[in-house]
Image 1: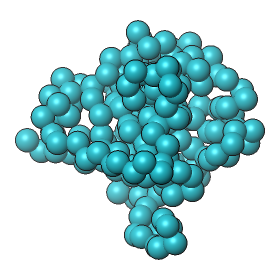
Image 2: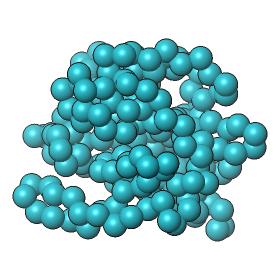
Image 3: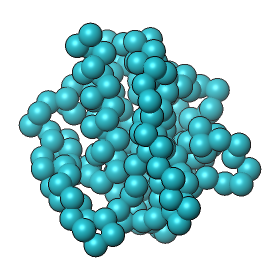
Image 4: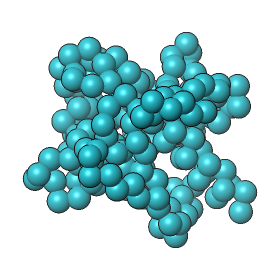
Length: 189
């Protein structure tokens, strides 16, 4: 799947959002394979961070002036938050930009495969804990529920993913949905 996904992502036109009033940011969608099955790594953000307190998300954050690219941002933030070294990530590509509804970010998601098992090192000030979710669980249609999101005072239809009582919503849920759509397209071809 990895080679096919990398080829698919490299050939598609990525949707880029440009809004100068928003803060450019990036996340890594960490993917690993265990016992022949793929899993995603999520973080539960601590309550000490300035935004998205306690939410389930992918590792990432705002672009720093020292980051040459948004991929540099995603890799730097992933290293800072959960200890995954940039050289240990095999980047497969990027998904469409997303706007966060509870903060002022434009989020660029990158898909990256990490080795497994991995010795994570959590930054406890930013990350409460890790959550490992099998891809199959997210692909199960029962895990996705319709919801509404509010952006700039207007409501939009959205959805959230549920796994063992954990709710994954907002931009993270939209990234999951794009990722699952990409997988279904390569599996359907």
